[in-house]
Image 1: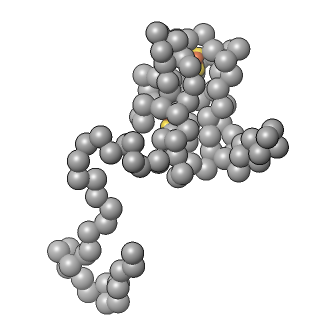
Image 2: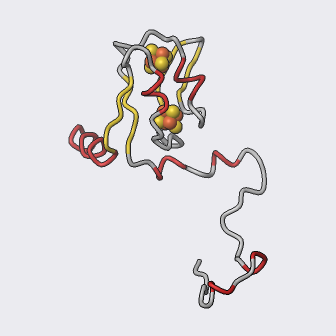
Length: 109
Ligand code: SF4
Ligand code: SF4
């Protein structure tokens, strides 16, 4: 999609075209917001004490827990904000450049 923004300096508020809109709930399945990420949280299972601070604080519900135990991170929706790494009291999450993480993954296969 492209917009014609010629003359935008003179637009009034109601002439500004509508941007992306989410019109209903439950759309997270379709929108893989992890594509936005420039840094990724890397979870160290050995250091993790399952306090679930990350699960509580993640603004996107991407720290995954099952039966009160941390099980991983949903990279399809994690935006890489780094909150989980900040709140983890046990340094069990560190942030890594997304490019480096992908290069590492490709090297593993
Ligand atoms: S905050 Fe850290 S220690 Fe607590 S569950 Fe998350 S990764 Fe594990
Ligand atoms: S980086 Fe942000 S979005 Fe991703 S798991 Fe951590 S708190 Fe959630």
